[in-house]
Length: 288
Image (cartoon, rainbow, N blue to C red):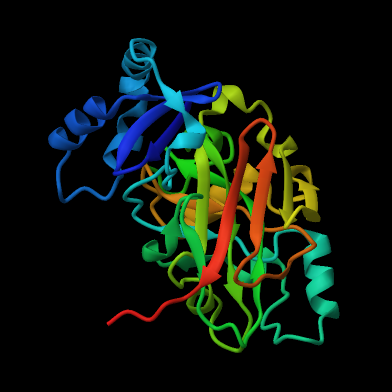
């Protein structure tokens, strides 16, 4: 199943090129969820609601996906967790860089993971606002995991059971000497979409391609088989420090080929069998 959020916080099931509205289910799920809970209510309810969502989707006509504004598939994650330096070739390319400050190219086991602000999360129909055009802002394409079941100190054998679905994502970064999470947490610097794809449609998560183009020119092309910490180990590692809750977003790391973007660019990220998203880059506008 492919689950999306769109327009004014509506919930949809994507079938082919159509989105079928199931927002009534979202309303019911949220009404029954405790406000004090850490989990995203809809993601937490997916195991119990999936067949009903599919039935509801089958009874609506649907509208073209191209006609809606796609939001992040998750509305209220408790946290965004990200893996740095998780592709060997990306570590090597960053060690060669002399044009920007590179703070840490240690292995992921030594560097650990980092958190991004929830307020940085957007969907593909939003615009990435480049806040410091005089500095280097770069794209980082990633496979993204959406946690579906609460867990802490999760074992490798149980890791995949904690995944609600998969997305593609952009972990945008402005280069500089500041802490990594600070530079990567600006508004719009965590793009996730185009929808959540449930694990039954994915197959082996350690064989997922990931590709990125800027203005039609390929910049990144890799596969999760090249991850240093594979999908299971990332969940084990993250959950050894944090309790993971349904709806938590986990960026798995970016491969080689990261590069500078600027206002006016269009970034396209794709992965079979997840799908693809095109995201516009714009300029940050100061707000009072």
